[in-house]
Amino acid sequence: MAALQLEKQRGRYAVLAIAAVVTVVGIPLWWKTTQTYRAWLPFSEISELDSLQLQLSVDIEVVFSRGTLTPEQQKKLPLSHVNEKEHQIDAKTGLRYKYETRYRTATIMEEDALNQPTAAEADLSLHMLTESSCGSVVVYVIPESSTLLPKDVKVYVGQRRTALLRSAPFKTSWSLKEVLSNLDLQVEQVVSTMSFSHQDIAAALSDRVRMPKVTKESMADSMRAIKSSPGYEITFSLLNPDPKSHSLHWDIEGALHSYIQPLLDKLAPIANFSVDSQILYYAVLGVNPRFDDSVSAYTLSADSLSHVINPVEARLGSNAASSNPVLNFLLYVPDAHHSPLFIRDHSKKEVPSNAFHSPRWGGIMVYNVNEMYGPESERPVDITIDMAKVMGVFLAQLRLMLGLQHTRPPTGFVLQSPGSAGLADWELDRLLWSRSVENIATASTTITSLAQLLDQIGNIVINDNIAEQVSSAVTSLQSAVAELETGNLAFALQYSREAILASERAFFDPSLLHLLYFPDDQKFAIYIPLFLPMCVPIVLSLLKIVSEAKQRRADKQAKRD
Image (spheres, rainbow, N blue to C red):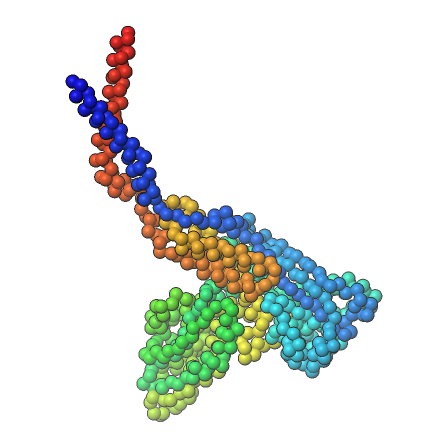
């Protein structure tokens, strides 16, 4: 009997020991080894980015030439003046524009530059004297009687970051405050033309704000331009559907060097560009043009242009090694049986350039060659394409695709052509402002969406690489916002590019999908067959021990009674 009691005691001790080991060692070890690894993320800083308040600071320098101020006014000329404007886009997004204007009189060398015979020569001479920083604007106020500008021209905007402003007539009895107040409106128009406008900045926030209050023109320009990206692939294609009749020759390398490369060199701070070309034979548009007896030519209506791209795009190919957006520019030479071929707009009028563009895709130009040879010419006919005519069209389309919209200046403004560079310095600044804001808006939306996703779904693995990318994106975003506040446009763009790269690498990391669709019922299906056979004996033994303990206590109580 004693041996039996001893054996039961040992059994109870063994069960308690096993239960203690499972509880103290087994369960914590299993929990630790099977828990989802989640690296630390700066959720507090990310939540601050959800409420985005941007300040854009512009440095303006107003230079008064001889004859625009009296000697007494020159002595009282203030050093600087700060003007701020605020726009609340929605509950979480706001914009503040800070214009810091510095006033001074022209130096002797600047006066000599302003005495040039033409405004273009004066603009070049002023640029040789000093180079303005990126994002800044310099306005030279010239007398009303100056012959530098035509009588009907109030403002001349050059290729750089300088503008010539004809001073409005004012009375000699006016105080300096009245003169500057009368000048402020004109300077504001110059800055809005050369730097940025509220409509452009609001349109750049389209990824963050659903319904920004912008004009139809600004929204159309925003939708036409391709989204901001670290790099772009640009492909020029020559389509020859009838190589038996036409032997086409195009100097694409020389044309790219003369017309496209200068523009891409100036856009180097914004993105990396890769340019290639190809010739496609027997490539057709996929739309049958209609013959118009009134003009004895084939025509493509505006409604049929949308059906042209898909059949052609299948022949273009793509660079599988690159994930950058592709811009396609196609030169189509109609076959002999469908020549000449003209494109008509919605009003049934022929398009002067005989070309059209598709938003965020590229452009197509139809190049007719039927007048270059006669019906009795030997086939195939050797034809050399006029690349100056072709590249003029493609360059205009490329500017639209990259967001370099045609600026609509106020009445009395003259904008100098950018020339061979393809892009004026102030046009580059306008693009930098828009792209910096667009990058910040996109990166902040991406990183806050990722943080919300990781916070809601607790079984997604957050490895150290993702945490590093998120932290890098947050740091770059904070730096970009700070640089915009101080007016350092070049650094703001650089940090915003780093932010959007880091945020997209973190958001699209493949490791985030490993446990995304691993529901709880599958966990039970895996763990129950593993733990149930082990836990049932232990639990039953513990219940038996508890029952025996209660029985012994009841027996002792009965003996006492």
